[in-house]
Length: 248
Image (cartoon, rainbow, N blue to C red; front, side, top):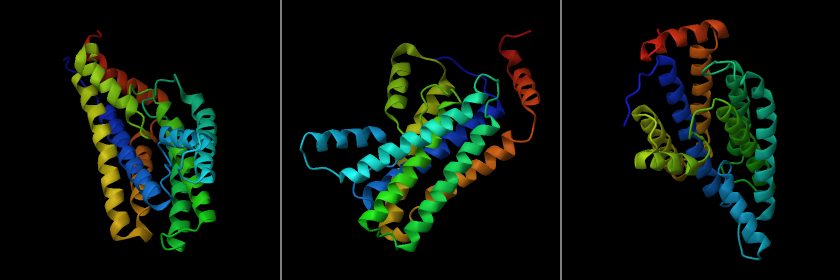
């Protein structure tokens, strides 16, 4: 497996992506346990549930499933259109990505406020609202992260990440650093789900505070590390660090 010289910006970016995956794991644990076995981030699961319902097999309430799918799609479309302007400009973490994640954080904050107001035991109507709110946030996050172009990393699902990791281990290989990144993303999702589930069992009223805090920390750190220097300056600095890999 190849070795890789990694810049400090790349390490920070990867750490932020792993943190977002931890947050997502907690979000889906809380949604599954507290909102009627529906996901807010893992839309593959919701699509399968939709198929169950169409096929006449018992599953989660269709209103919640549809609300999650529709809100996720809206969030992804809006964020995708917003961050698209930064693609191809050479920045490792554009400011628009941070802004999109701030919107995600605000949606998570709204979820937390409503959830806490009902003591972690929402009614059917409130559950639909909560699922839509968090799924919107996860759609925004997914589109924002996708715009970064990091191979195999999707912070709201790990299927593709696992497939890419196994492919690399079987000979597709990119680099050792990339394999570690993919493994850390998968571990982050599991860790977040475990933490979210544990908090839900012990303090359900405040369970959504954990993923909200993690996302807020990512927004703060991304602004700190990537939000101040002008794009041309950051790109030049990044190019100067990777030049020893073979550039004159």
